Length: 604
Image (tube, rainbow, N blue to C red; front, side):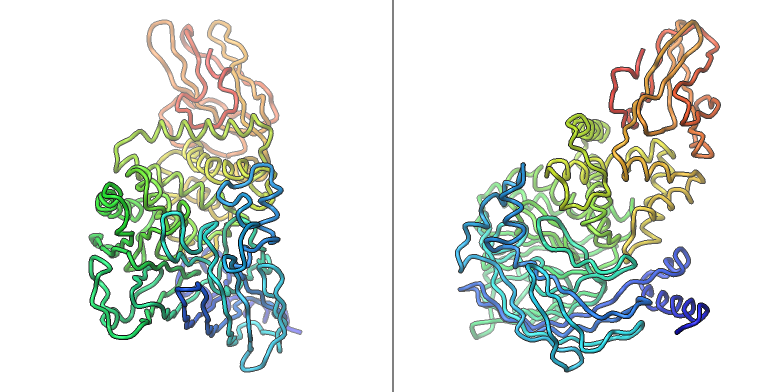
């Protein structure tokens, strides 16, 4: 038994070892730790039957203070089989994803996906394991002690499914291989324990580490994805089209190295065009898209390239500098999906659609791949923040109104409230009754959270909060409290009420003008969620005055040029104040950034 003093010392040691990539984190969270895993994989892909064999050596370091008696792997491709949880959920959901529908249930044996583990050793000793749906449950030979590193050697075989969701073969645009979540992937273990969630429909959570991946496949295929290509000269890589001079033989081996990421994704097609664009003082952006697309689509990909450079610059300037030397935009998804150092997106459609998906997925590099939230539990922190910054960047680059876009997002949030289908943002992503309610909660209510934060603490403080959040928590697994505590430190205000009411409940904001009598205004709080209040009063003499009513539990005020009134304590349902001139009209929140669910009583 360790003494409390020794246990504290071990915690500090683990925290230091786990966070060498981001030294800020130990100052902010002295007891913080995260696991580390290094992958080395050799993959042999048969492009005729879409089956592959793999060798995987995995070095896993237990930076936790806990003894681990088991480990778990994700086998994501097993979801694409009739009778899987993803299949059954889609067949029974009240509003299933149209991309899935009943398609999994109709897959033939040569069309399904699977990952079969043939052998697994811990430090050379054979292990007992069991495949349970999309999870491999592993009994260890010996427990992994705190601070210990162990080696797992695995042999596996797999089949790439017909593309149903995110990854797979032969998508509707004809891309041969979109390889996302394609390998046995070690589940994350953190302060909450194991996250061995089945793959039903939603997204992912991974362990930070380094990847060394060798992919052997037909020599006519062009490959792009995560990491840095180590052997470009061996494969004749780097030309603008797929018609390149290849070495003799039927196959080529592409070797990629990716430092400090938590996933590895690739795509391949014999008709990929490969082009690049250099970001000044930034990464080289690679573009992979099919040469067989119509001329208009090919021209859109040409137009996209300088805009992608602008996007990378915008995000680096407004969030934090992109830390890698490359990023890839790859035609290959069933919409768009973010991955380490790359994205898979649809290649056809309009230019605005292509740009919009690229803007969103590239923003995910910051909100999920560097600020690596658990997408199953805190989806709104990656999808919502990404949606916000994707539209903010797009409004600057394509010159459209960010204010108008934000108004439409607020309206979507209000819509789900009115349907009665809203669930708290603490709901697990797979546990929403309605897919639409999940999507609105993740993308739009998450967007509103960030926009409304600017209303609460001031725009300048919100911008500083984002930059500090990135600086302090990049290369870690932040949780909701981390963003709100960052905002508190920047603004000097107390904000736990905001995180609680807006994300952990379905309480709503509803303030109204109850009465105007002479120069006396009476407001009322009708919703359960508290807020500070911005008010504009138009006077009968043609002038106007802005007022600000602080929320007492904030213990302070945002920066404002408005006339600051006395605090409004939440428990009081009404609030009265006096003006100095006769009143023509009164309006609550003229900015529209407070997510009041009933706007009809906001102006009188």
